Amino acid sequence: MASVTLSKVNKIFGRDHIIKDVDLSIGDGEFVVFVGPSGCGKSTLLRLIAGLESITDGDLTIGDMLVNDLPPRERGVGMVFQSYALYPHMTVYENMAFGLKLAKASKETVDERVMSTAKILQLEDLLHRKPKALSGGQRQRVAMGRAMAREPRILLFDEPLSNLDASLRVQMRNEIARLHTRLGSTMIYVTHDQVEAMTLADKIVVLKGGHVEQVGSPYELYQRPATQFVAGFIGSPTMNFMPAELITGSSDGCRISAKGLGEIALPQSADGYNQGSPLTMGIRPEHLRLEAPTGSNCFDIVNVEYLGNEVYVYLEPKEGDTLLIHRSEAPSQWKEGQQVSLVPDIEHVHLFDENGAALLVSPTRSAA
Image 1 (cartoon, helix red, strand yellow):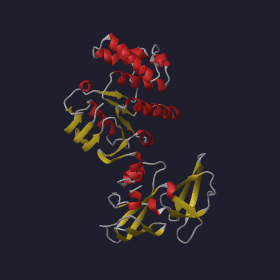
Image 2 (cartoon, rainbow, N blue to C red):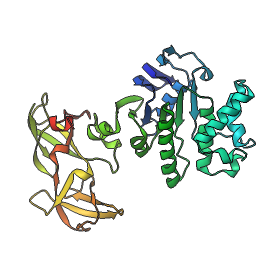
Image 3 (cartoon, helix red, strand yellow):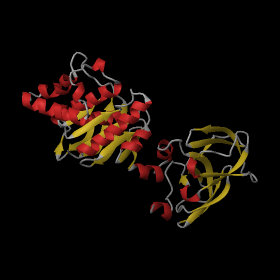
Image 4 (tube, rainbow, N blue to C red):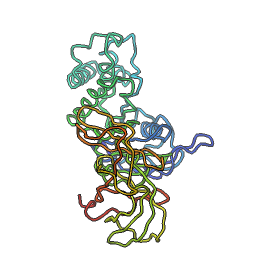
């Protein structure tokens, strides 16, 4: 196992600046997930750690060793790709042994490592088969086993579950989590699926346009997003946003006017912001309460989705702006075509300034 440290790491392809001054510390034995929209640089960052791409500027350290100029085979990393990349003419055993044979390991070492890895991944009964005789989940386990058999200090995963169907993704997600618990290895995992990130990670790194937007535990990113981008990216359904304006503010709390909701008193600090400052109010679907319509706080229910254990209610303000979502446990009393008022839980309201930065959270939520 080993730690990974990136200091002011940059990657430039021609005129495109893909990775921009990334500072990141990954602890020994941590499970870290890189997440973000397509094109944000998460796979490029993983390839820089693996040594499959060269660093334009900055330093990359694995353990106590600067590895900028080391080839992949000398970095002590194993990588699992999205496409499995198995040799179709080789058996499972031969696929898992291939890297060890290239490294000129003895026959006894090859056999010992392949068999112990196969036991961990429950592949012992499949060692004689070829990839075409395996299911998608089994192929992905073989790809993981090939990387693990080399006993790397760090395991890297590049969207390994994206080719699997929904039920297999859930199964493999659980297997990867159990594998990390069993091995205690340092693992770095790339995905565009924030559900995978939330369920697997000790620490999530949210990327946007080559920058690190926020680093933290799944709980921290969900409860205390540092930016509006993180707030909207983490969580499903996404956080509701609506335009707002600061009426009064101090270190003890503030009063805002939110479009469609009227005036709301909040516990957030608004020090440094002037009266009339444009803000964005954010509230997660489960932190909205629906009531009988009152005054100007009036929304039309345009759709109700029943998902078995919960219900999503889609609401449209009278001005016809972006739809808002309310989430609650099933069954629901609300029907399409009804009019309601929205009451936010003020302890869970988020405020963002015109640059997308979060205002300071309330002392109550900060201590949660």
